[in-house]
Image 1 (cartoon, rainbow, N blue to C red):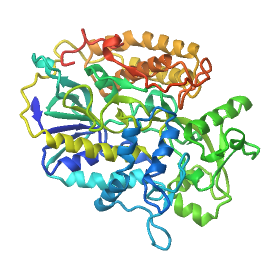
Image 2 (image 1 turned 120 degrees about the vertical axis):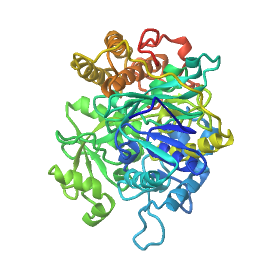
Image 3 (image 1 turned 90 degrees about the vertical axis):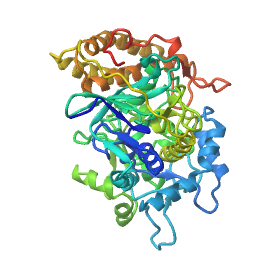
Length: 542
């Protein structure tokens, strides 16, 4: 039997690398609740194949890593934040090693094997074969499960955060969140003096994505509804190489393959990247993704091919066992055949605006990981900087939360569903979900135009009323919560894209193909926009 209110010192929503590492750093001194939508290991971090960028090799330097990051970010990176992150890269990797993460070592056991990815000037990506995220996630998740100070709520979906105005206070500091228990169907109240949004990205807003099903932009949507600013939401990174196969769902072909010599080819075996960029296959992701998109549309082909078969078979098997195994299951022997690939939505460089401690505009509400826009990634994330960012900002947020001391959480109102009923037709959610993802792919994808963006916004406006009416009248379920959040994130992406009148980094517009002289972040403030999902007449508790 669930009690109406559960109180903790810190509430963490999301169980990727950011959430797990924060929980472990806080648990020795704080009572932590970690909420996750599915199983503990179901996150984008767990799917990360490449590795973690860090200055570990002789000949590499912090300054060169910073410069590579700034170049990839196309002028929008915050130099101070970039330095803050890169300078801590070695320390964060050492922390993971201390936790027991088994990174791949050199064959002579002389040290850890480092690989090079697109946009990097050195080999600086430490990895665990081709399943780094899984190795890190498994190691930290086991420690989380065993820690007595961490309460783990699996199969719980956050509905919205709770502001102090909800209980009649003038300030709008965060006091916790309403969370849906997926198994019981009941919404419970979680109170905490400090709440952290670590829910990952929003790849599922697009039809084709490398992200898991949980990536529905929940943290960004909840933070925006609470009054947080967002920045650079138009900067959506499309990974150049997602496996193209009717039975392959969201399977990423790691950038490390290109770092180790894999070549992109047309169906006739001709290379095409050298004609698009002097860095060829090692160009940053936005360049490679646009080149593939261009070749596919120009030639009317369904995919291109990534070929590493010229490398020795034992090298391929030892470095890419996960990719080899999955492709082989689908009838593709990558030691002898090229891999069919297409671009797919991969990473959100924008998100809730935070400072170097992970603090948002709402007091006592933090955002870390892909949910946040810290200023590190700018207009295009440099490969393998994302896991590094998770670790650095988890540490910074932990230090800030510990410095605040402990305070009691006031009594909070229960979720009120006295005026709603069970949904009579779930098909409305399914239909709107698919329509949203399809028009976002067609109109707000790798290449954009004013007309396409206007069409997307028109479709969002049409879906608004249906979703709002459904949310107002029926009991919430996980699908409705996620659709509501995806619709909100889609609106923010489109509005941000409309506001940027240039082509920079991941945002490429046919109507504004040139680069403006000054690089300016796209910042949206809730006070300047009427949200599509107006909060005035929806369920009590919002």
